[in-house]
Image (cartoon, rainbow over all chains, first blue to last red; front, side, top):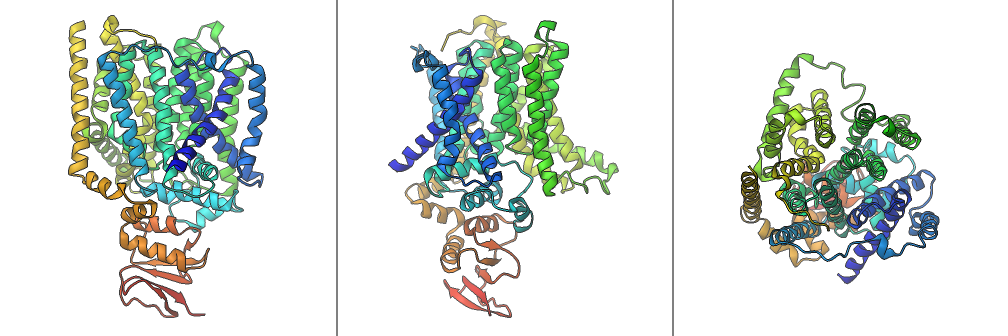
Length: 465
Length: 135
């Protein structure tokens, strides 16, 4: 038990150290708050180590702690040299005297309770839920026991394992593999700690971003609680699926983009950039996140940004780099002949165009079932629909558009998949809609918070944290 | 307007918490989560896996993993293809691979099952056993 706690803490700190040093590269002004830095450090750390493992595997190198950690040492030394004048205390300013009201204390207590419950649910059972054992956990087991990327790995996945989705990006399997390597052994019970740790890290960032956006600590705490208490969100943060990591990176991308647009701080652009790359590496739906981000950045430049704020070299470079990463993955899969179960050369062969209306009916029926399903979503979707109708006139304003637009674009692109899926559409939408809604749920809650703040006006108390 | 907004926020928050608590309690009692947690909390890792997978399936998987040579290929009988039990079995038994026409057949709850060219290799009980291809 004590060993397990030490392993989980050591894993979290080591992973965060990598992410923290990446953040130091672009947060030169030390603009990010401690909560943001701590949360992002873990979330980017695990994503980057996962990408690193893939690169090591492609080079035929073994998955060992040394091989994984040594490449980061020059970066850590560089940052130590660069920031030698900054003390750790000035870099991580977290422990301020906080003067919480009773409501705020209650919210903090409930958030902690919900997070503990997620940890409890994760660690009470080994990997057992469907996709966790059929896809993500199995991939991690294959990679860990192989000790590197096995020869003909993707070909074997296509032929040797039914239902393994060989076209899926590999953030989660490599994250789990990294945990097994750190643990010096396979342990599919303890590895599940990575899910609630990601949830905790994300909640820190979510709260902090929200507080920046609405300048109201009480509301930020209320809406952070709202997010973590949504049953579907909390359950999936414990069951080994890739949908919460996807929700995290998808939301981070657009929340950072929102802050970049509204606060005009480049540090958020780079946060969005890293989050988007992580999303591409998490699930195939990352492609939609990538395209949406590109579209929104370009839209911002050509609509809202003044001439002085037009894209400059570094940001063009970042967009080009993201495109390169995305296309590399697409081309890599094409070269290996890996095709998607949904998008392949058979998708439109014999497609029944007359059946579109029927498909739309099926999709809408399932969507409304989800929207009004209090058990899984509490009041979140109902409140969102209400606020959309109540405030549609101002939807194009800068402080709403960059939250609402990604919600609608992503939802539309997912819906388009249901329109063309070669699988039985009823089965497909019934078994996946409740999970894909998770990807945009934090954006929905964020939007509710912004709108509530607008209505609530200046009567809410603003406090620094 | 400001007071109304505040009231509305308060009512929504209370409703939100009430819905949250209601479904947690329902899940615990009606959904039998509490019963499940009580059974799981005192068990070790193997015990948790056994409870979660179902004891009969887990015993067969553990037995098969011990008795089959590492990397051997097997076929599953008595477990519906693509079901959650099937997925758990494939996951648990890796690096042994599930293929058709394998050297080993793992039989779950099909007493008397036999196939030409195979003999009983190891038995856990009358309904759970491993068949091996005759060489």
